Length: 222
Image (cartoon, rainbow, N blue to C red; front, side, top):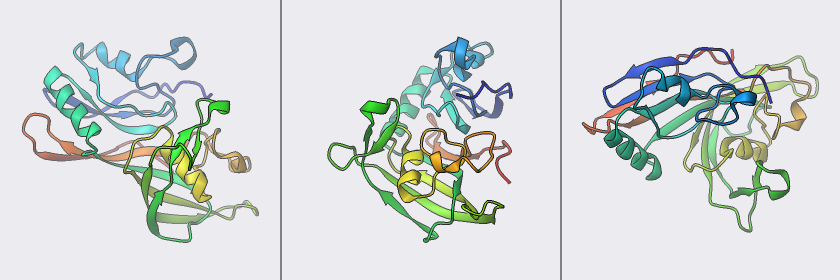
């Protein structure tokens, strides 16, 4: 596991009822093993925003947009939007290779890999239905003879399974760069982090109901 990031949390938008933040990579979303993983985003925000409440999470290694509630009403409304899949999330990922299709939907079930927890795996027997939309954004060449291309994809999870994007991209044959769990073939690709970022987030204002959209301001990839 990589060392915790010291990059400060960036406030993208501040409202009386919520915050939209840019979470640095290698930061916990909620409290965990502080001795190993450092102070979580939620703990740091509580110093300035004592009423902050978690609505959703990003993986430790994933950077990008998160919304947190600042009131109980906002927390209830935003949590319902996530539970009812009304929130539109788009991630950017750099992956190994070049997909044959410029866009499509990955529709294969995901379940726990009990022998290798906390990893997940494709499981057609007892796995839960999982769908991810992907769109090719860019293709770059590399100096690696066994992996001549890397590609930038926009990924939109239509469901919310653990490690869904990483598992689906592995199944597609285009592992996300920098992933130590699902991208064993990437030993020859030198990257400093998991190349996955929550880039765009769209939801309804928890009080007014207006549709609002945000984009990450963190630097990512090339």
